[in-house]
Length: 155
Image (cartoon, rainbow, N blue to C red; front, side, top):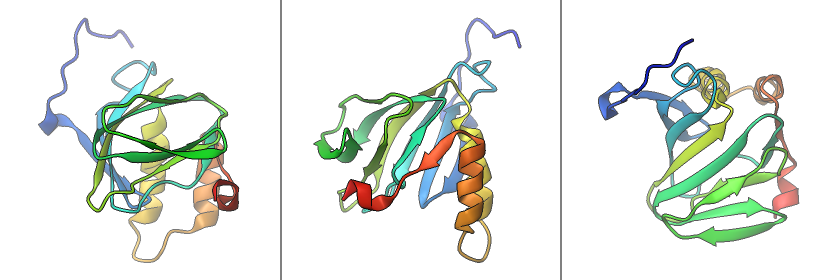
């Protein structure tokens, strides 16, 4: 794909994907950037956050927009105030959680792109009338090089 010289994506042109209790508002996906990166705003409810995991393929960085976030990186939890950059290199075990009483908004990016494809597949599991099949979530994750880690390792 040949990239245009400039791509502008307005707020009404974003795509919303819901999974794990979070909402991904996709600003730029791998299809927009020829696979170079993905960029989205993640909205996480109070007390929410993904399970601990690591990526085989992507480096990931975060920018809390509103509210503080707690990150588990390097075997410890750290409280991060808004507008602080956090970097999780590929293969690092990491997660985050929202310690606030209101939803947390964070700008998140991955290199290379494609994380939204994983999130979309998981969203299909979460959109059913019954709780998601966690065996399916683990298989989807593994197909995308994302590996869940035992929660007890972060407590």
